[in-house]
Image (cartoon, rainbow over all chains, first blue to last red; front, side, top):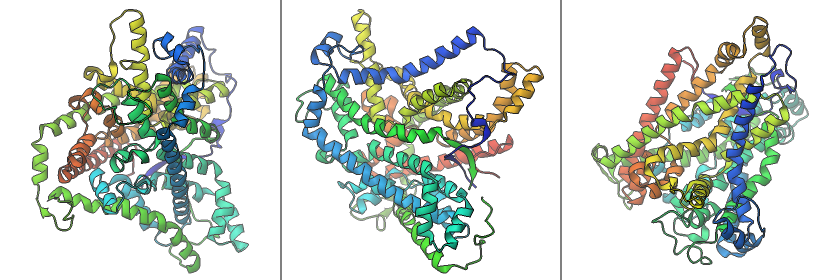
Length: 316
Length: 311
C-alpha cells in the first residue's frame, strides 16, 4: 500500500560513527577539502547570519540602531529594553498566552488521540483494523479542500472560537502511521509477557509500549506542537477580526511584517502601544519571542533526530 | 506488514472480545475527528455544483450543474493563478529539488560525527519556523528597509527592494523555500545513504574506482528509489506551492505574480463569499493533483521503481 517514512531509532551498522577515514579511501586533496569546508561554511552562514542579526538588533539600544542605520550586525550597546516593552504590552502578552494555550492544549489532545489510535491499529488482527486504516489513508489523498472545511467548521459554530484552530487539524494521519509503525515493532516478547501477567491493552500501552518508544513520541509531539505554535492561516480564516484572541504569529504578521516596509498595507488600528511602526528593536524582539519556545524545546527533541531520524520506508 | 507473533492472536480469529472492545475505544476519537473534519467536508464539495447559499445550506441550495466550472474557466484571473502555480512549481523543481540531494552527499562525506551533527541540527531548524517568521526574516534581510539595502544605501548604491519586486518574485519565494526546507529535505536522502552497504565502496575502491565513479555507480543508484519517490510526491503537489507563503506576500507584490490556485480559492471563495466558485476551484485542483500522482506513479513503475505505492 503506501510507503511512509518513519522517524525513530537507527541501530544498523552504517550509522556507527565513522570518525576515521577508511583505509581504502583516497587522502582528500587540499582543494577538495577547502571546497567542502567553504560550501558547508557558506550553508551555515546563510542559516545563522540572519538569525544573529535579528537577535542582536532586538538586544540593541535605540542609539545603536540609529548608528547602524537600521539592523545591527555587531553588538554595540546592548539592552533588554525591547523585551521589557513587549512583555508589558497587553497585545503581545495576550497573544503569547493564547499561543502557549493553543499549543499546549492542542498538542496534548493530538498526542492522546494519535497515540491511542496508533496503538489500537498496531495489534495485528484487531477488529475493523483494515477498514480504519483505509479510512485514515484515504484522507491523505482526498480532501474536501479549503472551502468545504471552512463551511463545516463554521457550521459547527467554530467561527470566532479558539477550538477552530485546534480540532480540525488535531489528527495528522501521517503522524499516526509513524507511531503505528513503531508500536508494531515494539518487542512482541515484552508485550506477551505483560499480557501473561494479566495486563490489558491500556496497561500495555502505558507501561510497555510508550516507555519503549520515547524517542518517536517526543518527535511526534514536537511536530504537533510546532504546527499549533505556527498556525496562522486558520487564525486568518476563523478569527480575522478578534484581535484580542490572536496568537503570536498573527501579531507578528500585523505588527512587524505588515507594519514595516510593506507599502499599502494597513498599520493603523493594531497595537495600541505603537502609533505608527514600532521601533526596530521592538519588532525584532517580537520575532525572537516567537522563536524562543522552539529554541528551548529543540535541543531536547533534536537529540532524538540524531539517535536516528529515519529508518527508511515501511510498507503499511 | 509485520508477521504476527505466534503468541499473538492471528487475524480473522476473534477470541478476545473484551480486548477488542478496548482497541476499538482507542481508535474511536481519531475516527470521529476524521469523520467530522475530513469526511464531512467531502459533502461540501457538492457546493461546487450548486448556487450555494449559506442560509439555505448544502442540502437545499439550487443545483447549478457545471455552471460554476464554466464561470471558473471563463475567469482570466483563474488562468493567471494556474499559470503562476505551474511556473512556480517548475522553477522549484529545477532549483530546489537537487539541493537537498547535493547537501546530503556533502554532509555524508564529512567524517567528523560532531561536525556533521552540528550542521544537521542547524539546517533542520528553519523547517520548524512559521512562514510568517521566515518571510519576516527575509523582509528584514532583503526588503526596502532591510540589511541588504542598508548596506547599499551606506555605500551610495542603487537600492533594490527584492521583497516587493514582481520581476524576481519567483526567485524570492524559491529561495525562501530553499532556506526553510532544503535542510529538512536531506533527512530522507541521508537515510537512504546510510542504507548503502559500505562494503560496496571498499570493493569498488579496491577495483580502482575513484571517488566520482564510486558516486556514479554506487551512491546514485542507491538513492534512485528515494529520488523517484520524492519526484512523484513533488509532481503530485505541483498545484500546491505553499499556501501561507503566498497569502502573506500576495499584497506586497500584487496578485498578478503572487496569486496561486490556493490563494485564488481563498480570496474568491471566502473573501468575497462566493463559496461555490471557491469550492469549484478547490475541486479542480484536487482532481488534477490526484491525476498527477497517478500519472507520476505510472511513470515511476515504467522505470522499474516503486513510487508511492506498488502496482
